[in-house]
Image (cartoon, rainbow, N blue to C red):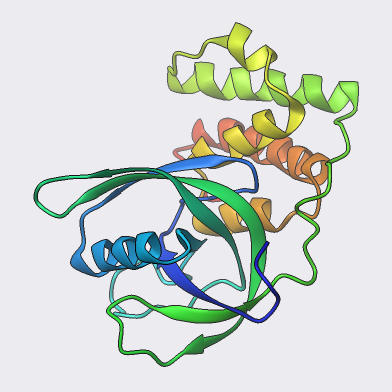
Length: 211
């Protein structure tokens, strides 16, 4: 586990959520993030995912949300042209303390892990909440024409189901951040059900943005 006040190299990416014990595949092609991956591989294999607040691309170093998740490179494929395909395994969430002035092409921060007990076993979902989440996920997927193996979904444990849906659901950045910051898996599941319902119902009116 990473100590409090740790120095982390970050990959700011809007809409890309990493949760503890989940996996996030990434294709790394920008030179600064190729340098980030190379540095991580040479050291502790850790990369911190965090969402930028400004996603219009007008700012070179946009402000960041306060909470992200640090991951460890679990799989890596180094391509001949310098790009990487990697899979991050989520370790624990963190709170940003401050950004560090560095000479590296990638950004670095000081982070605290004190408020997150992400190594602890999560409480199970209530049967009704699990059923609500599966039902709303199915309705949402059907409304968008997604092909889903629902038998496989039904076999997922609660945490994998909740975090998997939270990762792939096409919500806006603020909604994604709220899901990441939810204190427990049941709280995240309840929030996710509400988001799925809202998004599905409002799409009939020309689309919706969850705030």
